[in-house]
Image (tube, rainbow, N blue to C red; front, top):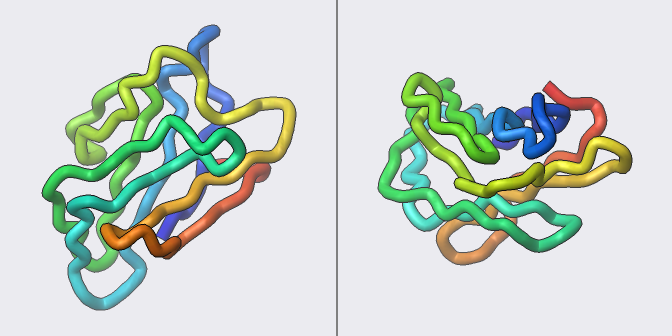
Length: 109
């Protein structure tokens, strides 16, 4: 479900970094309580509010920007999350804490 990580944002705090998540299945997925986390550091973690992801639909979770056209999700974190100089990974956990997706970068989006 995690498609890619745009890990090399602009500016020193890289607020435009994002993780792109797509529903590749045939049924809608309720993301309420699902968590996106930086695997290397274990934080920050973003917990999805009530949101249903339709088949084929994608959303982005930004480091510190809000883009309504991509779901409006943001860690609200004031500094870069995804390392530019070494590999890192993002994991998506369902509401029970089970890992459902993990992507390592590079490559990025």
